[in-house]
Image (cartoon, rainbow, N blue to C red; front, side, top):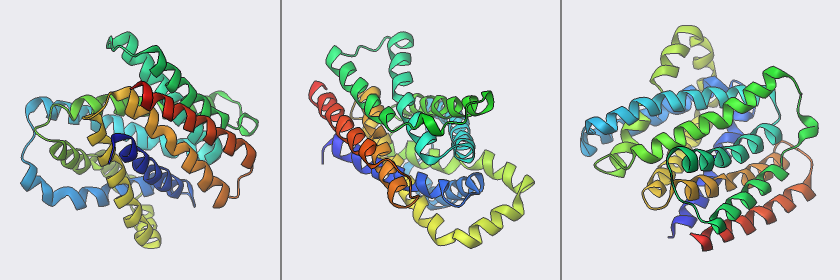
Length: 277
């Protein structure tokens, strides 16, 4: 399969487990349990991938901070806003911020046609942004901005970190093994009963979501070793279209015409970026 196909598969899986976290509340508890289940799944594989080199360990340390920020920002955004507001806002702004950082801070070269493709993708995503539902106040704005900034943070760290490991599998295993530690320590100290009750009530769904999350981001990490960061970061945000359909079908959100237009625009952007790259 092509890198594009792999990223699109990852996008479908990503949208699905994000919708699950949004549904029925207790988002941070679910994220903590989900990350812990994944850690348990990958733990046996540490004996096969070996201990990462020092440089990779440094990236892993920063990545744990970045992913903790991401999971915290995700659940905060979903608490304060509709799925149709928080998700497209964050996933649309993230690739734009990623490109800006790569251009101005890492001196990466991106062609005009690639920039146009990325711009069309972002436009398609932002078409889904329902500004009418946005509750305008400073707290909500900071919460929404915290979400895409944390996405950019872990995207850049992981995209560079995975290339320093002895293998992609090594980085994947150790990253997923370590991610839940900060959240688990906090949760067991502050909301142990909620963690237990959330797991008991949702254990089967959480296990399925954990497998989806593990598979989705593992595919993305592999893609970072095969294609430029901006390419992967932009196309994986096609997950917003799948998330939009989930919102339409399962959360009974409105706006069918807007969603179809957004899907068409994003499709054009993906094709243009693929051809330009």
